[in-house]
Length: 193
Image (cartoon, rainbow, N blue to C red; front, side, top):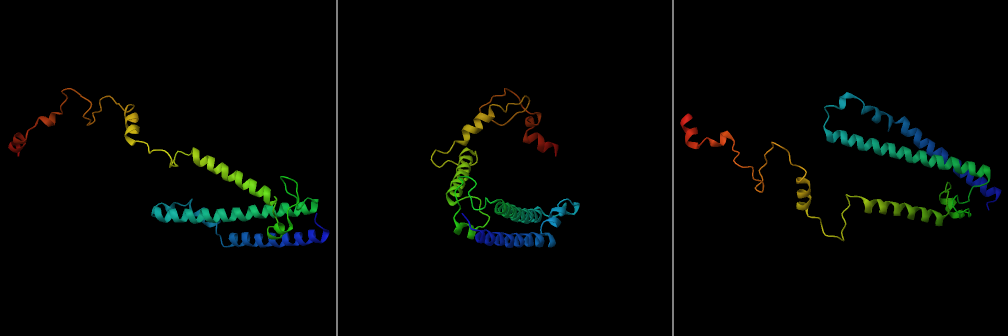
């Protein structure tokens, strides 16, 4: 359990971290890292820009938004940790209820979980990602033979029969259907010139 001096130390450390993060968010807002870019996409002046230019603008705006969201997420964790100090539950893992190692709190003062629970949580997240990856139709399975694209085409082609549309396919016999222009010979064409 943390002593009162340790609680004061960690509270001061958290307040410093909070001020630092609020400063970063303030600079992001002041420099209009996010707001101006997001407003630019609603203007019609982008209409005639090259798609590559617009793509890089979208990428930069998404990175800015992601960075700001990350800082806001950490700020929320810092605020929760300060509340936990005031409530007397700071330094206790929210999953298993064990005390969080002081070295971990020294490094990450807003840590909510002990190392074991954090690893288990990260492992669970990785397993969820792996399960998603396995079920994704866009991920190639390296242990099975590659599917034959001809089989896919034949399966789709059977549903693609449209009346009065003639395709150039040797397997299908359309009878004596001949386009009237095909009856014009080269000789007849040369005589008309």
